[in-house]
Length: 633
Image 1 (cartoon, one colour):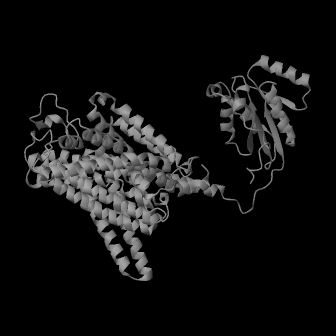
Image 2 (cartoon, helix red, strand yellow):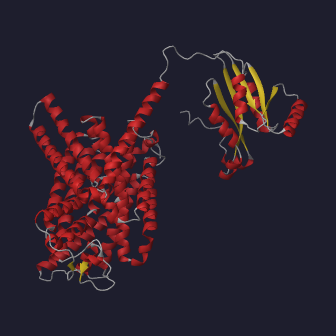
């Protein structure tokens, strides 16, 4: 796709919702479950707090949504935590936000894919031993989809996302109707109990805080909409804000509905099935949504499989939110020279291909290391999200304060400041809760990873700054070389050698010398005979190499040349161009090592003289000057 087709990849709201919001929407598939898993440690009494914890989580989601709505309008070119922090809080704060976000984008892919496979293997237990291969295969599939372009991936992901929304809301509506009619759905685990004794006092409060921190997985991905404003159709800010509010409304409704239905249907779930009492022999624990859909629609019914399959698909496709957010953020960091410049460029499908490949590679590595375990991966989750939330909202408070300082406190500025101040305060408190309750359960890895990422980015920036200083043109200008001395490397007298000699002579150097390193007396003698037989008008110099080295004798010869301080030595290296990767292993290895060495010699220029072998002919491009005029235009 050409660069001028970028507008054709911009998203309408109906496609932007599944592309940017599948993560926070799909997290409802496991957010309530994570709350229940923690509360199960406190016995039956603690589990009764599930709806209360869910209410606190959705209240937090509403606050964060309103805060980011302000950000979208204030930063129509993309107002993620990095951009906001960079402008208002300074470089280091912005890099902390960026490092936290990059970490959580990777974890979003790993957790979403692992949760999707976990849900699928719950329906088809025979596939349980293949959890890791399934995860890796699905990451590869989502990667390929995103490499094809955001508009096409948006179309593909729309159907599963809307399918999940419809199936879950139908399940909640039917479950509510059954409850009101007096035939409330009963979960398969309703008759079970907990081995854990009921907690009270400080221990119960601590457990409630921990369950709240786990339930905050429902907030992952909210940042993606503000980061991805440039991908929306015009008017970008208004469309992005509408999409964000729609996502929040859907996520809040689902979170409350699933939590209430899980409580009324009597679901019992624990980290391991043996932590429950009253379970039959060989009992296999199913996910919360699986138990709810079985209770509402009947086990193995059409409705049951509709919920299961749509849940599996959206959990897999929720990774797409990260596949849109991570490359855009990486591109912004690369543009600011904190990441390699390769991450800044779009590929031929107008997507940030390098960022997509990097994200999928790191996520796949995490899945492999953690054996595709959702319970292990999810302990690393959330912390980075709330670091970026807090920095972003704090940056917005500074942004509004600066506007008020320049133009006075207008009603709009007052309300905007209050919204973001509340958002910053609340997310900072939640960050402390998450850090305290999850640190020993795996969050410490993120605490280590984010500063390491910040140090890496700072070092990359220092490198690019150093290179910029080195490349800056001198005030005195560039001095032309006094003379150019050509050295043509010769191993045997063949067509590539003759071509290199011809090109060297055509450049009209001040002197020209053919250089042969004598590592084989018989081949050297044959070269001398061939050279004299062809009567080549170039001086042939032999350099002895008693230890059969090739590179050091050439370097020593170049250093021994008696030339002026402004003279330049141009070394011509004949090289074979091959058509197959395995042929590359058989050729050019000495030339590659030699060029790598000569690049560090001041006053030496290395010129490769390519010679296409027959195997390379199918890959050869048209001869220079044979193309149309369209390229020049």
